[in-house]
Amino acid sequence: MTMYPWQQAAWERLQQMRERLPHAILFHGPAGVGKADFMETFAQSLLCENVRPDGHACGECASCGWFLQNNHPDYRRVRPEALEDEPAGEGEEGAESTTKSKSTKAPSKEIKIEQVRALADFMNISTHRQGLRVVVLYPAEALNMPASNALLKTLEEPPPGTVFLLASNSLDRLLPTILSRCRKFALPMPGHDEALAWLKAQGVQDADSWLREQGGAPLAALAEAEAGSREDMDALLHFLANPAVDGALRAAEKLAKAQLSALVAWQQRWLYDVLSMKLSGRIRYYPRYQKEVAALAGRVSSAKLNRAIKAANERRAVADHPLSAKLFVEDMLLEYTSCCA
Ligand SMILES: [Zn+2]
Image (cartoon, rainbow, N blue to C red; front, side, top):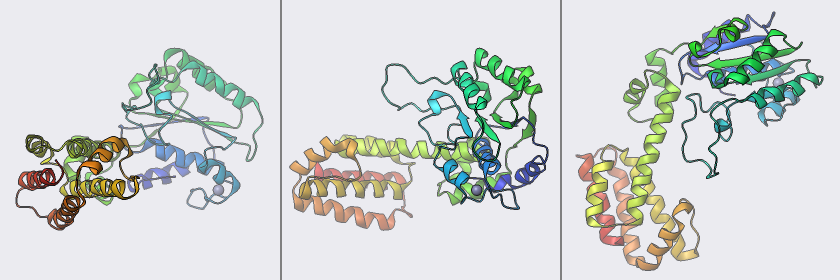
């Protein structure tokens, strides 16, 4: 499980609750500071059979094994359906992801009463290991009214040996009656320098602006930075699939602020796919563009393709220090056009 450097003090504070564990703990703080990961780290440690002196799970016992494989019999995680196809810890922001499966009904962003009711069965059977059951539920403000009321009933008559860990980005959106049943535990915004150092260590370019744009929340900044690069990647691939001079100028305008070394790397992979398609009929990096890659592979001669590959390799070396980002991208796309259009 992941814990972040800025959570160390909070973790130590949390350990003091272990001796007389409350029935329900509500972790609260701004979105994007890592509440869900913190909570799941704690959940694993509560179920661990060999907890380390610093309160962390051992990572090696049978219980930890089940937890990490997502099938611990004494553990339940309750999230809105819209978050369920993301890995644990994602979606603190409330799951704005758009490109999910094309089912006719959008997955719910609410936690529904059926999800809370399903916990009743879980709480009625005896525990498998340590005599403790753990329920993690977030974001608590996603509970709709019937689900809130059902949860409240459970919290009013807490089943023995069960711990509820809830997280919320905004306490004022929760029922006061639920608040009053939970021990509150604050996870505040980390200091700017600490957050910035972490973000840079994740390889985020221009980390300071991303962080400031997200009000200092490091996980929100990371998600935004990654989404930003995905947008750039899509714009580039769309151009590479349909090269043309006017398109090159438009795309360069759009991509002038992108991370240049990433642009070159994406183009290199693209060219690798075209070459691979030509040689073996298979592609590796961009299966979404299978059709376009095949069309290019059929149309562009090996000599021209090799010229494009060589140019991209050379460009990689200067991508970190271009005189002008826009000219760099224009040049790159125009050269590609002259080889592949
Ligand atoms: Zn363990």
